[in-house]
Image (cartoon, rainbow, N blue to C red):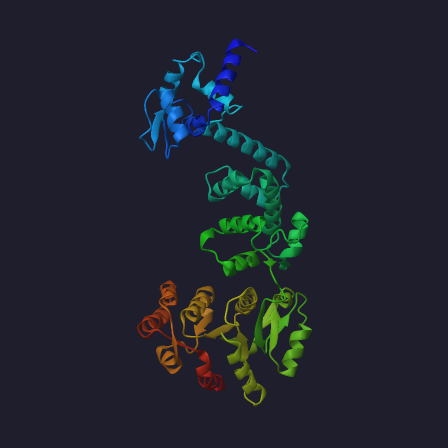
Length: 436
């Protein structure tokens, strides 16, 4: 051991043996890491009696009446030069004290960048070619939202990052090149891509990666997606969740597969003149949907649908195709209505008079434009179905998201009276309209 090395070890031992220096040395290490050089000040608060005595003796000033002290690193080093450890730099002392090289934040960041770039180059060489990989390469080569997201994920977990990137690449390759294929259950897709059927389950890390990538690809703001809109996004790329539990109620709806064969289950319900539960499982095998006379009447609540169906079942009146969104716009409802829209059907929508009901009407109008007309959604209809339920201010704030003129008129009135209206009270009016 060289004499200077031996002296450094002696100095480190000297300061380690005195607990009063412990917090100061930790603070000086942090300051050096932040600045990348010996400089700046450190502040020690709530001094203990031991620290007051130890630091006061070293600094040659009394700290007995102080609760805190500010010490510059250069002044500490100058004081060190007045001791038998004069030939030792403060940096050498700190590294000996903490038994290893002290890496500055700048050095650490540079190391992370180098490691990350090595990982990216490995990914470029080994990842499967495809549209997804091409898109990701382009994102990583520019200051894009996707690149910033991936770099942030690297900082969070370097160990799993590359594996996740390979899985994301394979997923994007598959989804971008097979958008015309039938929808696939997300568990089966996850098994194919990763070997784990739960890899893309809600809340899983890879699910977050995939949703962010698909949203970015579509030019959407990921932060504004909720659970429903995330499911919609996945469905747009051919992925479905909970296909048996995602359903829509329908009456007198005809479905045909890719061979133009009528769906036997739907045909059976129509012949029995009964309403049916149309699941995503069913819709995944349907190519074409048809309604009676190219017209479909949509209601929000299944109770209303049941009442309307009962009327047609027990009368000789001209039948109509009826749909209930079951109080929400899930994937099955949207897929079903998309298929009807593709067929050129004219749609009429009636819902509840509350913020949530008006927002459903807004979304449907934005999605289907002129193919969808509002049904019994006027001020007089609102007045006719008012309840005693008061709408909270929190719910009323949702109304600012409306853009359709007819709905804005309703929203203004709703803010005034703060009461909800429910379509169950309009059933007689619906029947009158349907009877013509």
